[in-house]
Image (cartoon, rainbow, N blue to C red; front, side, top):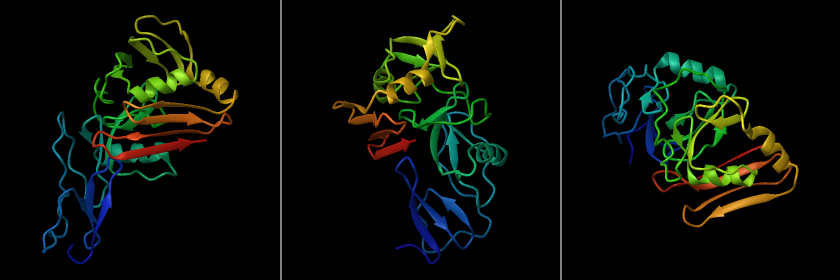
Length: 228
C-alpha cells in the first residue's frame, strides 16, 4: 500500500520509481506512511562517476553516461527530442554519432549528435563482449548482429562512426563506408532478421524501412523498440 496521492511507475531500465502527486516529486525509494515534506529533493542512486547538481522539484530523473542531468541539461535534451517527452531512466549517449540506449544494452535509436549531456561515453556502456569498439563504446552483441544484417562486417577493433553514418578505422580519416546507406540497401532488399540464442536478442526489418529489436536490459527485463 502507498500513501494517498502516491503512484508506482516503471522506468525504461525496469526499475520501479514512485510519483508523489501531492508535491509533484519522484523518488526511487518506496514511500512510508507519511509523505515527504513539500519541496523535498527526490532521492537518486549514487553515480559511479561525477554527479551533477540535484534536480529541482518535479524534474524527471535522467542519468546519461553515469551522470545525473541537471535542469539545463534536461532542457537541452527535451529541445533535442521534441515532441517526445524526457523519460526517467539510466542511459548511455554517443555524442559523436548520436546513438543512444539503456545503460548495459544495445543502441535503440539515434538522436542529434553533439549534445552536451552527462559524462564521457563509458567503454562498457553496452556491457561489451564483442571486441568491437565504436567511438570508444564496446558494442552489444545485438549491435553486432544488426550491423551484419545490413551487410557490414563488425571486425574486432576500434572504429569511428560520424553523425552522417560514415564509418572508418580509428586513426584513419578516410571512410570505409556509410551505415545509413547500407541500411537503406538492406531495407530495400526484403524482410530480414537475426536471432541470438545466447543473448536472447532479436533484430530485424520488413524491407520497407521498418526495423525492430527485442532483448533484455542489464537487469534481465525484456525491452524492445521499433522505428520506421
